[in-house]
Image (cartoon, rainbow, N blue to C red; front, side, top):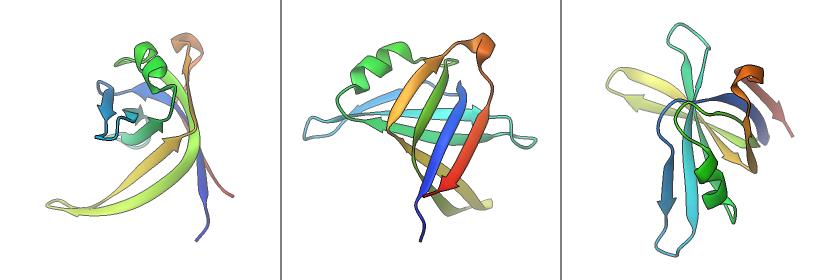
Length: 110
């Protein structure tokens, strides 16, 4: 199996979720909307580490971000059939200006 690396630029489509584990570490979960297909697609972007709280203060619903990190594809079986889910474990998340932002997803093997 090859390692996948993703770069995603897009708009936060749902309110960010800042979570804490019992051990005290934090994670920030973002649902990023894309313009792909008629219904679009949503991609989960997850950030962990020391700067989670700092990034969480800058990111809100509608914020445009750029994230980069390892990607994971999953296929989930549900009532309506199978659906694919893409998650990115972000090494970094940067807020970008809305007027210079575009929706973009790049996936490469490493």
